Image (cartoon, rainbow, N blue to C red):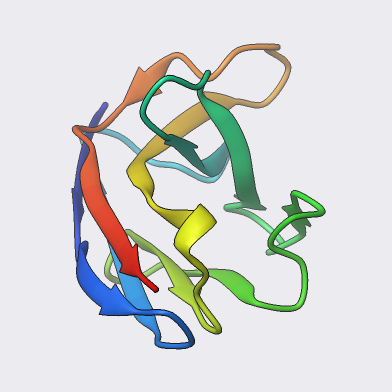
Length: 118
């Protein structure tokens, strides 16, 4: 399983960005795709997840109502639409995959930097 993340950048507070994560290597119907982030000096934290089959979603409280995770099965791509961005959203964002029935996200893409200026 290989994950390729893209879409980070610099944006002003209140602005929007869309991150993409393209998956390759195998069928993903039995996987959960997630986004995590790590800010300088802080531990990595969960942001959002989507079940590849069925589309069920889950969000961290800090991003509910502002971020939307979605997937495009045909493109094998997971998106994270981030609106109303705040300076505290500044972090390196990582996409990850977890096989259903397992506890850990075992597959990770490279990070993409998101910087929100005040």
